[in-house]
Amino acid sequence: MISWEQFIYFAITSVLLWAVGAWAAWKGKTGMAHTTTIAGLLVFFAFIILMWVSLERPPLRTMGETRLWYSFFLPLAGIIVYTRWKYKWILSFSTLLALVFICVNLFKPEIHDKTLMPALQSPWFAPHVIVYMFAYAVLGAATVMAIYLLFFKKEPTVSTNRPMADEEVVAGQNGLPELDITDNLVYVGLAFLTIGMLFGALWAKEAWGHYWSWDPKETWAAITWLAYLVYVHYRQYPRHRERLALWTLVISFVLLQMCWWGINYLPSAKGASVHTYSMSDKK
Image (tube, rainbow, N blue to C red; front, top):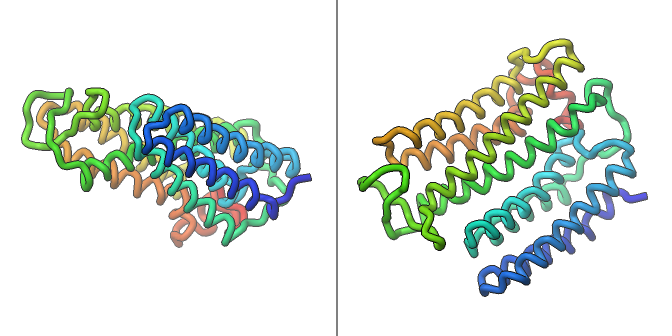
């Protein structure tokens, strides 16, 4: 049976493969980048499956377990972006971010046992958290793109969403403006975020008898969802400013972090939220 102590071997192997993939992307070795990144994903996912079998439940109960999924979905989102738009740097960023979450799990391991409280035994629990983690990873990739456009890219061009403007938007390597690529990532992430919320409502109805209760966790989830919706609608406004839109995206991701783990440290959530159980088993 697999144990959490064996995670380090899977983690090191996966990170090394992802690092080789990131290096290959920079060198223009597309085939190697895909092969090594996907190999790393398979190794990492193998550990998740083995933990699932060992725990006799989906590894989604503690913050450490959700970080496990997030560490997996970050390189997955990175390889999707790299495959679609050929950005050489995206695999480096996704690997670095995944490494951060992996290190947190290595240096601050959570308690992983077979105990699963009745509220978490709903069939809606696993898809709710998994879909949310994928949405978080895609929206994380969109935020990386936003930071790249705000602080690193210099050459101004024009967004396809409107004619000449006084704000800078940079043409991507395939001719598609990079801000529009960011939009596409937000559309995908927001779609999965919405699906995750719907799964969560079905889970809440089965576990607690109501779809929505406006407890602290659900309130922050709604705030996060509305923030990304504001970004989407603002981008459709003909006289929008691209830099303001990008900052909206960065702020939205900060709100997302509050929804995911920041809520655990707010006094209003302690003992008041049905989504926070104890410091060792928070979702």
